[in-house]
Image (tube, rainbow, N blue to C red; front, top):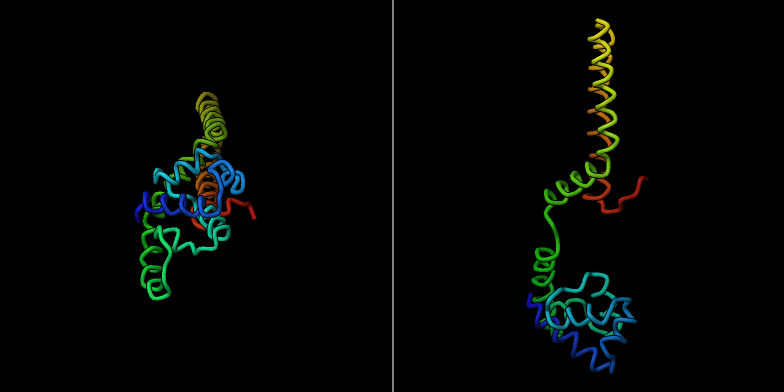
Length: 170
């Protein structure tokens, strides 16, 4: 996938429709600088922008990704290759997504986990000072419950975001 070729094709289509970069940006809801970056091949437009440009310019997404108009004979052969390259270029591996969302969840919940940990330490210290083995056992139970809570809620968050991409709490 040649980003420069894609950019040149977007510029060609924009000029054919007599749009300035600013006008195309207004239509698509992005800045003219973003249009410029696409046209110079600095960035690949995201999928929703490719869909919008496809509809606006009456070309297929595959033609946009190939950077030229296609004949019907060329279409089937190139479509599969462009889709393969697009998936490879624009996506993270599942492991990368899982690692990213685990770190993100941990950052968002560090305060709650710290409070939970301080509470467990306080219960453990009190059990040692007053020599209450039942309270020490309660502290260990709280530790296990805290770990189970953290792991369960973190993995639910990761599943919502990394696997289905919704991020919703359905």
